[in-house]
Amino acid sequence: MKRPAYSFLVCPDPQLLKARIGEMLAGAGAGTWERRAFWGDDEDPLPDAFWTDLTIKSLFAQPKALIVRRANAFKVDQWDKLGGAITGASPDVWPIFCLEGEWKGKKPAVPAHLAKRDIWKRADKGGWVWQSGGLDKKSMGDFLRRWASDKGISFDKGAEVALAQALPEDAVAAKLELDKIELAVWDEKVVRREHASLVAPTGEMEFFDLMDSLARRGAEAGVWKRVLEDHMKNAKDRMLFNLIGYLASQARQMWMLTHGEENAVRAHPFVKKKLTAKGSQLGEKGIMRLIDLALDAEYSVKTGLRRQEEVLDMLIADLISLFRSGRA
Image (cartoon, rainbow, N blue to C red; front, side, top):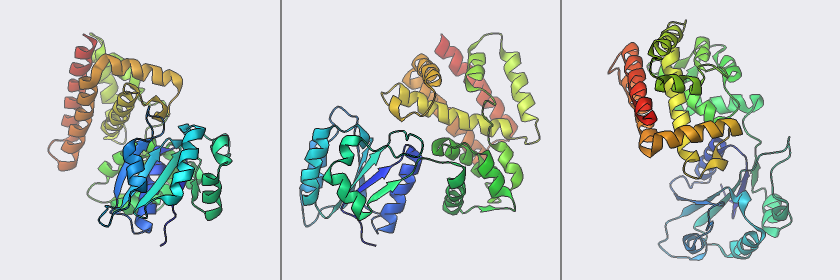
């Protein structure tokens, strides 16, 4: 397959962008190319390393995909500079510009100053633009089938539809929920209708309420009561899988929010504020510990090292210890 000189990906969802880039590179026979990432909202969005890779030709150069995230933050002069240099780009590089602004309805988020420039017009005319408003119920089926194919997992009758209806319409959040499903079907590799109940409905097991309870002395009884009630539901591993998924998701977002990546976190401003406060309270070591606890719990379940009940008990006890120390 002949690849384009460069590409534009217009999509607000980083997980879908990642998947699309992988598909593009593999489809063009460039799956083994080195991938280099640059950030359009950095202080120096296009450093010397980018221009060196873009323009310098060499007999023994390593082919590279130059992936520019959040390129929608580029100013006019940066697009003008790129427009002048892109035609002389090395044949061993594939510049990929990700426009990650939120869409207005069904209108792609293409900056007005970019749409007027030749670098965009040429890509649009050549079919070098891919657009997606993000994950929705219509595209969920394809998203699920790609995931199942990658993992070697099949669907029992009615399971795909049930899971598509249950998953959140956000690829990052949906991926975290699918990680729980993968754990649940680890040996059998078959998703059944009842596995859809593992997906946490909006508002269930409210993260902040649980974390605040873990940090309050004298609240242990209430925490354990909640844990046991959730764990004794029809899907006995519901609480454990939900908790592992929540911990991984929230820790990731706390890290991003406390390290200057607020624009990449798709959440309500109120939620961002609470996550930032919790992340600042825990600090870098606390957030890293949170990630470690989630990974340890997942590993213990996958390998059969411990029973699910034991993993859940240890996880809650470790979380109480972490949030108490963070509070102190």
